[in-house]
Length: 222
Image (cartoon, rainbow, N blue to C red):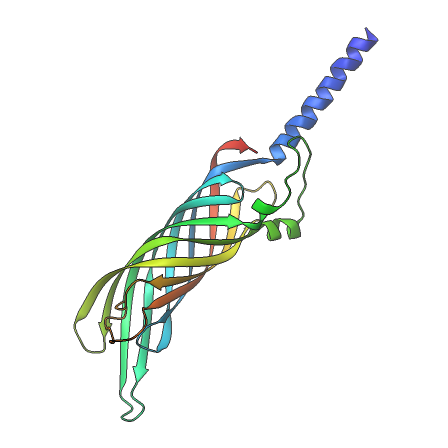
């Protein structure tokens, strides 16, 4: 009787420990987020006057540290160039919308993973290091811009994004994900500012944003 009682207690302890341990290794596969920040442009108008943007994201997580998704952005950008001899200034003001597919791989994907049933308690520093990421993808930008006093231009261009940043859970068991994100977009064209100078390089625009994402869906296990 004592042996049976001890065995039952031992199984109960093992089950509780295993359940807790697995929970520490779980993740949710979906996330929606919002963000906002500043934009910069590098076009034929050599001086950027910046702008702003707002964004919405939807991501699917293959693992806690490998995800892909869609991002919708909307904002403004502007710039100018100046004739040094006459002092005449040529500027543009643009409003843009982008839709991009992107994938991100975090540093945590390359860390040694603990065994399935080992209890893990990550420190803030550890979570921050594992949350560092690089990413890329492809997108299309639609820009309505006015170059000086000229008529409005409406241009659509494809671009390739290069991104880096950090995704950080405020607590280990939190569903809320803080994101700090920098992105440079290499446009496959030369008219997001409404003008194209023969022999000039393709346009580039970039952004620095901060945002939050909420993870949802059933728990998945490593």
